[in-house]
Image 1 (cartoon, rainbow, N blue to C red):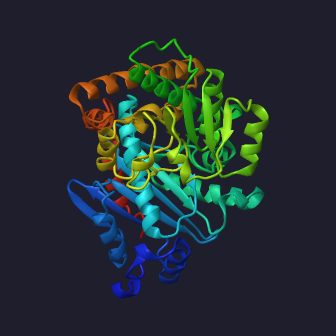
Image 2: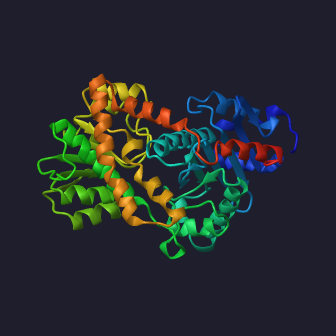
Image 3: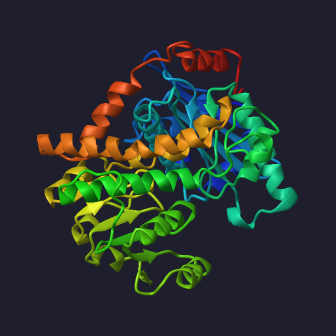
Length: 435
């Protein structure tokens, strides 16, 4: 470790990722970590004190077991992996290839997302903990192709390999099965690899199937019926925010079942494709993202970025139900759950209904069976309905019912391996990872 005065590295959380990468290379720090083991917070470098203070005091921190970063000198990228809990098994969740304005926003996002994966994996009954990772690149992620893109994912794959199985990655925002193939070529802790290599490829179809089943359960609950086989949505108006891999597939299922759908998406090519594919009487493209929340409908379905249900947007909603595939839809998981409930809007917890992506990935290492994934997707309906019913009995938000379930299940240790993740973290620290 290169020793520098702490004041030289003050305010690290406020830096842009590009400035952070430059600063770390200047002082010779290319790897670092913040861990929490047996009640003790650890930082790999005393010179990272300002960033350690931000992490430790962040409202998103929640005693994360490990946050590991690497500055990739060759590509000027920043790799960040977060593991929230690993007592049920290795942290498992996708890798986002995304730009952020500040280091603070990047670390906050990985903490929120990895905590969400703990909840999601536990409620799905998977023997995995919660993990998530981010690749930050100096240019638009979609601009990287060919050799340049492969170099990023090869180097990132070696970074994940260095964590010794603490975190298992998968496809996520702006990544593809081909990217997973490159990662997998450099470590074995990766899922969503292409079919020809024995993987499950893109998990979006499974995710969309689960979101549809959860949304259907919410519609039926509000309508006072409980029939998973009744998929008729004629007369229902559903707002879909985001028509990407998951949202686009959800739109297809909704229209097939007779719903009227209003869609907002930023990409012009996506909007043109939707208009060409579906009849105008069933699909409307809405061009203004701000006024989208004010449209009167039965369901608002967020399928893009997180934290979109907040103090500004919730008062605008004119729907009976919120149910979608985006992660961390509630900017504040407690306050905004209460706000929706107080307005009489039923919230289908995101980590209950969007869990099928990770279920699909988790099926992969043991020999992928698509039929089993389909069966698991069908379970989303009764599981969602049960949570909605129990929450109604207690007159509180379904979010709290789901969080209570997640807390109980997340405490259960892996029946064979125990809390192996904690032992791996101790090994990484004792062996000088990051020095």
